[in-house]
Length: 303
Image (cartoon, rainbow, N blue to C red; front, side):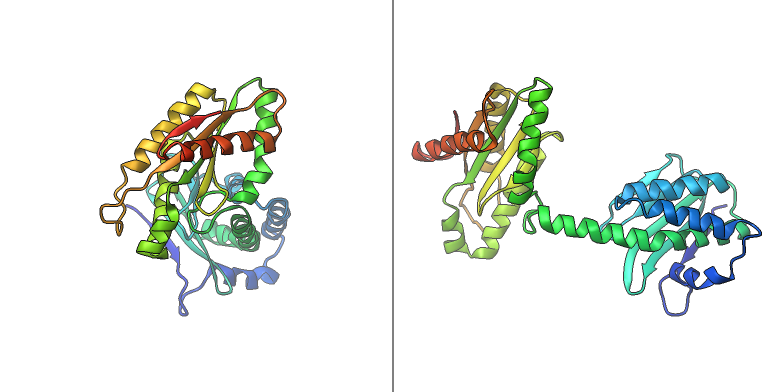
């Protein structure tokens, strides 16, 4: 039989945050307070959400057996340890003051007893504030390094990462190529259909490019309608093939609100040379992009 324990965030039910108020009442006889203090110290060492969950799970595992521990953020991103979920579950909706932090789920085959549940809640109290801080840190990084409209990395992230990517590929003796792409006649979409449709075009193009490139590649929005794809361990032939695939998939898009109008791209491709700097490699690909535009648009040019 499946047993589910849940702490809800409503005015009439206790919250995990209320456990904090019980800390002064905890005694050292069973080691609970010492365990909480030990966990708190560990959790203060990181602002990475996955590391926090791992540290929390390690302490839980030292106290009793479980099958899975998972944490789910408000935007449904999930961090899980363990693969085979047990039939008995503890579900905790985490909250600090008015801030919802997501949900922790702990499962195992054996039923949880009252003592175990109380200990888990005490340990969750130590997790709350470090988790809130980690989520705030992630949100700040996302604002700094991700484009709010398309969700892809922005120019700041590109400037920060591009030199590092070049150095890594040089050290590994692997090729690195970049694609600079621009939406053809983008101003016409804004002027004719409105900025809402223009924003939709940008979002759909970014989504299509992300779905086309590999997980080891990176997409950046570096200007209004200009994007860069950094291709790790990729030679010029492979980069040209990928650029052509991107061009074809974007040209095949049917975007709501554009009626019969089609979205096309001009793309410039360049391969890192031995003496390239980030600026010279980008400029060479950018010049190839403008050559594609001068040659009629909706095409790929390599330089």
